[in-house]
Length: 120
Image 1 (cartoon, rainbow, N blue to C red):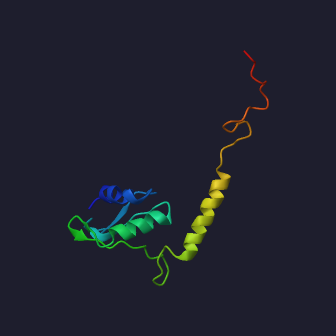
Image 2: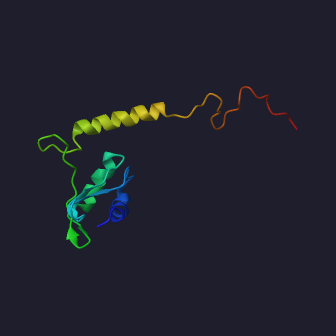
Image 3: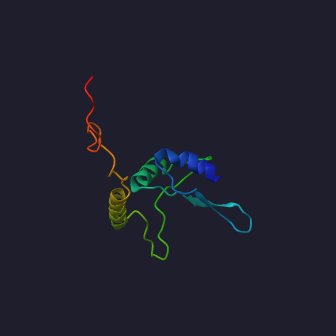
C-alpha cells in the first residue's frame, strides 16, 4: 500500500492537509496495516468515515475511524470540544485573514477619490 493510493482515495472527501502516513515496521519496512489521513475540517473526515468504513481497499476490508489521542486513555479525536475549538479557530482566521480593502471599491460603487465620469 502506498501513500499516493490513500491520497487519491480519500481526497474525494475533502482537502487533505498533509501526506497520508502509512505506518511501517522499522526493521522490514512492511506496512503494519494502518495509516493516517488528516483533513482540514471535521466535515471532510466525517464524510470519509461514513463512506469508507468497511469498504475494501487493495482487496482488504478497511476500518476508518478517528485516531486515538496521544497520551490519553482510549479517547479519540473528533470530540465535541475539538469541533468547537476548530469552529472558533476558523471563525477567527476568517476575520483576521481578510484582504486589505482600504483602497478597494465594492461592485457598483464609484471611488470617492476619482472625479465623476465626464458626460459625452
